[in-house]
Length: 349
Ligand SMILES: [Zn+2]
Image (cartoon, rainbow, N blue to C red; front, top):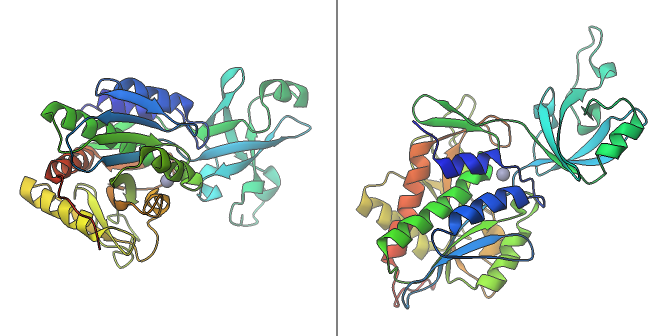
């Protein structure tokens, strides 16, 4: 197996929420092959494949990833941090980080405070204030010459392959979604003349609240949106399918059902999957989807919205795992869906 080149480049790029420029650049360079690339003030990127009189379909993945932000540099040159996005501080202990600074990238490590780990005393749960980032600085002056409060960093976690077309990396959430959006643009552009315009997009700032999704829809005015994101696959020890259904690695796209998902779009996605012989599962969200869709379905005067997810293990960690078949199947599903739209498509309910 080879990791597709564009996906690999997206994974090598860094882009915590609000600091996505490097990853966005990779996405835009790849997107330019399929149409005109545009951007907005929040940093989101779009490429439009022109189509007929049918509804405008936007296929969107977020390009940002979780990370850390420097809040303080102490008297010995250690960095205090806060989380960008939601994850357990425990995951950070012993990790390597890359900081994005004014002078370029620098490396560091996340260490747990000595006082909390010595002796026989059992260490308690790790909190963010138990951690310091060490960049190897001799003193505060040197650290402050290299790093400023507000600099962001991500954990290191280079992509590598496991058997069964499985791929490990940091930031699979959600570079894979932004990659699927690109793949849909490619498939639709190759097929030619889609029933309506298809706009693929890479949204910023999802991990901190979906702001760019909402702002982007005001500019884009799509009729239908498919959000590509990842969902926790429950084929790992301790997982419970009673939470949101069964969607293991390799089971294909997880099509989300729930109150905020447009039922006609969901039905069309299911029809497209069955017509094309694409494996899929149904996932359920009783309330919000915890994706950009939460800020998109009720944007403008309301947008017919669906979420299609790629099963992923170990979400919000540097060892996220996906299976390439699921990524490909998501792109094929959305391209088939695009072909089912027409001037008479209605999403009323
Ligand atoms: Zn996430």
